[in-house]
Each structure stands twice: as structure tokens, then as C-alpha cells.
Image (cartoon, rainbow, N blue to C red; front, side, top):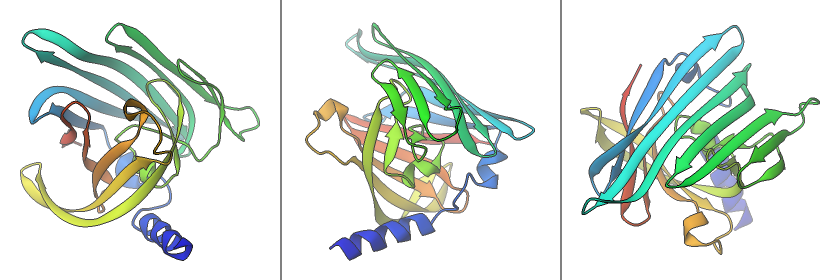
Length: 226
């Protein structure tokens, strides 16, 4: 069983390039729609800018769920990731979730051996193999641990390659690689548990769609990129 698990990890990592790909570095923007039960309720957009060896990724996410004119859930979030030579060096975000304010302030330690996090849910350190849990970065499928972009909490995860799947998106059919991303600890409360299905274009390393179930079916779906 252990041998099968290790082989699965090697196959998963072999699908991708080992550093942030040139296709992603050269992007100017990614636009994603947020859907609930098939209806568009908001967006999650990323803007990329480069200067010398630095890459800055700015994210804005907004959506709300209304039922019979009553607002049940609302997110309004801004975040900035900064990379030097393709390595994460800082991340900041502020999120208004209903009436709660969440935040993350992350920086690389002076000796460059760990991340230091001041977040609304976690204050402490994290290993360098962590990835910010945003949907522009395919490297979230190459690690066993991620950092919440909303609160700074560190979440252990397990990735499973499900198989190839042809999906229609951006008005064309694309042969994708399909993965599941789940919390390693399955005893977590349901609202804290990671449980996503992710479709990625192996030619560009762009995540095309993310789906999960939580008070309905949710999707983050690629709308446009350049």
C-alpha cells in the first residue's frame, strides 16, 4: 500500500513543471467566475505584474448568496502575493466575511528558512513547502500543506490524481487532468475541511475549474486569461 501511495505522488508531480511555469509568469490576468448551484454569484480575479526578479499577484474576490432577498453569505477579499525568483516572500490579505474581518500578514524569515505568519486564525511559523491556497497557482497540487489566504491557518492536505477528463470551457473542449484535494485529517468539522475537485490544463498549468459541496454546489470557473 505504501509503495502504491508513493508511486501516485511521483506520477502527480511528474504531470507538472517543478517551478512556476513561464506560461503563468507571463500572464497579465486570470478571471474566474464564482457559481453556486449553476448561478454566477461573483468573481475571483488575479492580476500579475513583474519587475526585475519580482512577481506580484493581486487577487480580488467578491461574491454573495441571497435567498428570498436575504443575504446569507458574503465575501469581499483583497490579497497580494509577492515572489522573488519564483519563490514566495510575502503575502497580505484582508477579507470581510459577513460581519467578520479576517486577515493574513506573511513574510519570509530573515534566515529564509520558514514563513512567519500573523493571521486572524493562526500566529506562528510555517514550512517553506506551503503554498497560498489560491486558485491561480497549480503548485497547490504539488504540496501536502497550504496556507489559508483568508485567515493564515496551515492546512495539511492530500492530493489524488483521478484521471483525464474532457471538459467544455472557454467555448472549447479541453483535455484536462482531474484531481481531488482533501484534508489529511478527516475528523475536522465539515466547515473546516478541505474537499475540492480540481481540473487543470496540463499544457498551460492553468486551473480551469474547482468544484466543492457546501450548502449547495460551488464552482470557481475560468472565464478569461491573457
